[in-house]
Image 1 (tube, rainbow, N blue to C red):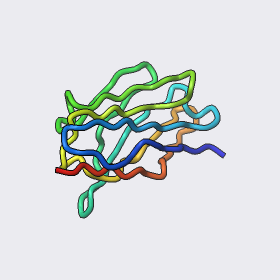
Image 2 (cartoon, rainbow, N blue to C red; image 1 turned 45 degrees about the vertical axis):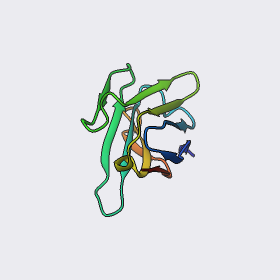
Image 3 (tube, helix red, strand yellow; image 1 turned 120 degrees about the vertical axis):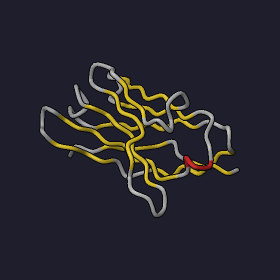
Length: 117
């Protein structure tokens, strides 16, 4: 069954770095748009970054210049490198995959990122 598995969250001090990983199963990764969303307590889920199958990237203004999204097609894995983290980056981060081939979206289970001041 197709699914996404996230890893890499944790607790870090302000100014620190973390890297999130999102591994996709099966054939759904090929050509898919990979995105990272986050949801802080009491707030709506928001788009953080996305990368197309061809490698085009987009970022939310709040993370531009600090976060980098990438993908390794050989490993069916997407990454979110988060640098210069701030307390306001604290949230549950979710990986999202849109498969054009299947016309279906998939969500990861979520991983907690906590940035202490």
